Image (tube, rainbow, N blue to C red; front, side, top):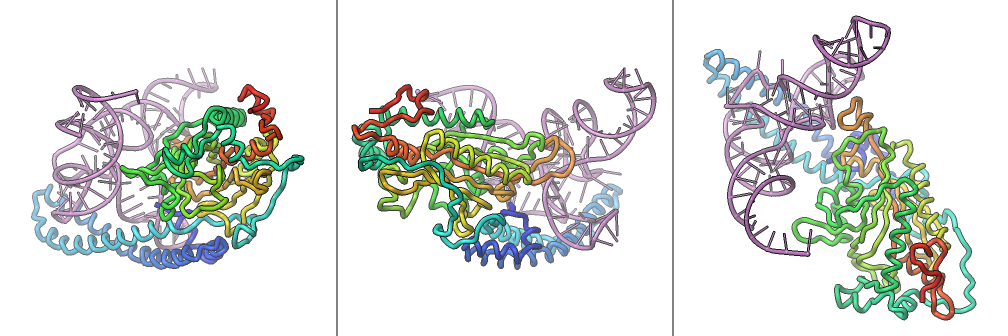
Amino acid sequence: MAGMLDLRFIRENQAAVRRAIQAKQMPEAVLALDRLLLVDEEYRILKRDLEEGQAQRNANARLVGQLKREGRDAAELMSAMSALSDEVKRLEDRERSLQTQLDALSLEIPNLPHESVPYGVTEHDNVVFKEWGVKRDFGFAPAPHWDILTSHGWVDFDAGVKVAGAGFPVFKGTGSRLVRALRNYFLDRLDAAGYSEIVPPLMVNAASATATGQLPDKEGQMYEVTDGFFLIPTSEVPVTNVHRDEILDQAALPIKYTAFTPCFRREAGSHGKDVRGLNRVHQFDKVEMVQFVAPEESYAALEEMTRHSEALLEELGLPYRRLLMCTGDLGFTQAKKYDLEVWSPGQERWLEVSSISNMEAFQANRLRTRARPGGAAGKGKTEVVHTLNGSALAFPRTIAALVETYQEQDGSVTVPTALRPYLGADSLR
RNA sequence: GGAGGGUUGGCCGAGCGGUUGAAGGCGGCGGUCUUGAAAACCGCAGACGGGGCAACCUGUCCGGGGGUUCGAAUCCCUCACCCUCCGCCA
C-alpha cells in the first residue's frame, strides 16, 4: 500500500519532503523517511536480480513443459532448475520482507503542507484568517451553556454518566428537538449546495481506518470494538472509503457527499474546563462534507467548503473566526486546514465547531482511488484525485454557542430565524 | 450458531498443474463500407511496479495471505466476503 505520495515522488524530492516533515514538527517521521529511503534503495537493487531470476525460471519452466509434451527427457533441466528456484525463492522472501518494511514505513510519512500554509510550531502560531459577526452586548452576565441546558432539562449530564460514563450527554425533550432541527437544517443546506447524502456504517474495518489515515499509530483516538471494528471518529472515514479501490469517472468529478452521523472519540488525556459541559464529549453528532475532486480544483474546493460551513454560522447569527492552521498544527493527513471557531459568550472563549481540510492525494493514494475518463471501464491513463472533508458543523459546541448567544435574562432562549421553521418556535423555554 | 456452494478482466462466463503469453460473449476504442448511421467485417485494447534518454525490456496480479512443485487460475492450508437452506431475531 502506498503512503501519502508515491515512493517515486519521495525518492525524487527527498530534501523537500524532509523539510516539509520538519515543518510539521514530526521528528519521528523524519526518522521513518531516512529508513524508508534506505530500504527503498536495497529493494530496487534486489528487484533487478529477482526479476532476472524470475525471467529465467519462467523460461526454463516453459521449456520443461515443451520437452515433456514432445516426450523427451526433462530430468536434467529439472534438477538444474531446482537450484535456480531455491535462489529465486530466497530473493522472493527478501523482497517480501523489504516490501513489508516499505509499506509500514510509508504509512509513517505524513502529508506535506501546501505552500500557502504558514510555518509554525504550535497552535499559537495559527493565523486568524478572518473574523465575522459582532459579539452580543448582553447587559447581564451570560450563563455558560451547561447551566442553561441543565436548568431547562434539555441535556442531562448525570444520566449520561450513569448510562455510559462521563462525556456521554443525554439530550432530552427540547434538547433532542434542537438536535433534530440542526440535523435537518444542515442537511437541507448542503443538499441545496449539491451534496448527496449518505448514511454510512458507524463502524469500520482496519483497512478503511488505515486508508483515511487513522491507523496506524492513532488508535488512541478511536474506540476499538470486537471483531476488528472501530467506531468512527468522524464520518469522513466511512464516506471517503466508499470509493476505496475504485477508478472514478473523471466526468463525475467533483463528487460531493454529506452525512449526518454520531462520532466517537476517546479523547484520552483531556480534562478540566476543556471537557466541561458540551465542550468535549466522547460521542457527538456532526454533519460532514466530503469531496473527491480533480487535483487542480482542490484548493478552490477547500475555499468553497469552508464557505458552506461559515454560511451556516452566519445564518445562525453566531460570531466566529476562521483560523488558518500553521504547519505545526496540521494533522498527519492534511496539506492545508482551516478551523472555524464560534464565540462562546458564557465561557468567553472560542470553540472549534468545524475543521475543513484538503488531503490532496494523500488519502487517495492510500485508498487507491484514481480517475480517468469513463471510469473503470474507460480508456487512458489513470490520474490522481484529491480528497477533502470538513464539518458542517459539529453539534455540541454549536448548541453550546447557540444557547449561550441567544439566552435572555428570563432564562428563555430566542431561536435564530433560520432555525424557526425547523423548531416550530420563536423561543425556547 | 449449523450445513452446503461460490469469488476469474469494465460486465457475463470457460478454464485436464505445462502454447493461459486467460477461450468465448457483451460492452469500449480505431478502421473498412456508408451521404450519415445501423449492420457486417478487420484490428486494438487491463492494473500496479522495476530498468532504460528513448524505442523497448522485464516482473507481479485470476478475493487476501501462506505453502507444495522445475512449473499453480488449477493442488494444500488459512482468512475475508457473497449465495442457498436451517436456527435465532428488530
